[in-house]
Length: 201
Image 1 (tube, one colour):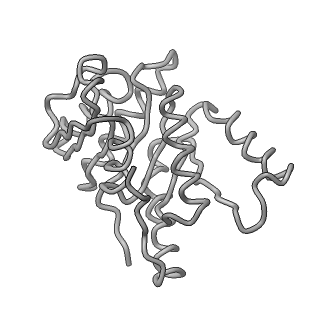
Image 2 (image 1 turned 60 degrees about the vertical axis):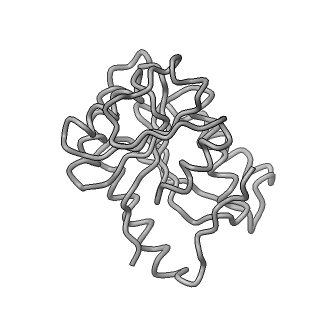
């Protein structure tokens, strides 16, 4: 059975205006560290990105940051990471984040977080991978996106055979159990299907 050794977390480079967002990032960082699961993320030290990375390190966990050269100063590259990969551009960053992770989690964030999440959903829909994708819907943050996905299904833009259903939970403590259950089910029912990385850009 497959195990989760590294989780890629997409989240905002800002803190947002709801304290629950930072609290969730910090709590999930503790969960990752206590379960010996490596954090793979965008490499910044501000906002939710910084909160989760600091929490993982503070609790004895491992962090891999992957950041484009042009964002090192803007997002204040996290200096405490055990591994920091500096890429040429966003495309390389996203490819490496995919390759290094066994599952994906979207915490609250902005356009960049949304874009990364939707790209993973697209790759899964096209059969490029079967890694779990989870939306941490803290205080209803992702409700509009979940409603939009439902609308796309209702209007048959997400058609039979192309359905991709992300996991959705509403609290930090529910994230890892949901990921582990999804990984267990995939391993049991689709063991013959290899996880295929997306083509290089």
